[in-house]
Image (cartoon, rainbow, N blue to C red; front, side):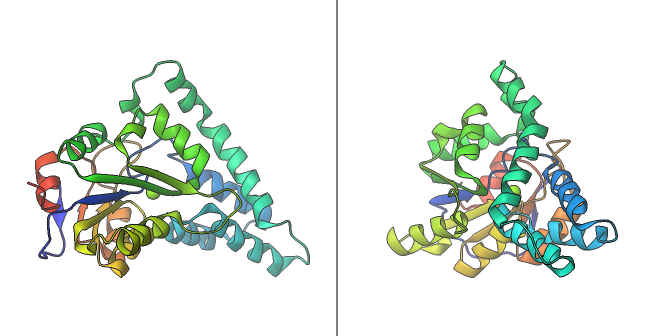
Length: 257
Ligand SMILES: [Mg+2]
């Protein structure tokens, strides 16, 4: 079900910037648990609530920033720590291991629908048919996200795919948004940003794009996750969906038909 939080005059959307994990793909469902375990292991017990709060708030930013937070916390307790990229490598190694069974499943011919929100492929194909430009940007490493989008059979839908650049802390979501608005002269009101993290929703609000929140339940792959819904509304989402089943309604909210 789509809930419209703020009605506003919207020009017909000509371009959509998508987040990937938790918005389209559920391949990395459970990343929070992997990060929580790593943080607890390195910081010791007693910080569970603080860690959970931080992970919740930081959803959608580059992993390296989350690891910088971890490193600062380690330095509050100890005089030495590894570099942020070393923590990121360790987290990434653990995460890739924890989702390997899913990527292997796809490589062995499993139906990609099993690892996407319901209606994802149909929604993207419809937007393509309607000549909407589609961009994919993520805080996940570029090469990993590209591989995962390919495994899900979604790569061909996008005009540009941009994940986190290797060993750089720049924000790919903001980079794409700036490029579209400043270099390609796209009017912000013709751009929609669709994501499950408050980072991309806040960026959309800042740039004047249309913020459509995806309060996804990544296990069920459809329906609403109430905690995510509140987080997205607080970040400024103009409307919230849980999946892409109600195609016509979503296109209507985007002013496309
Ligand atoms: Mg996400």
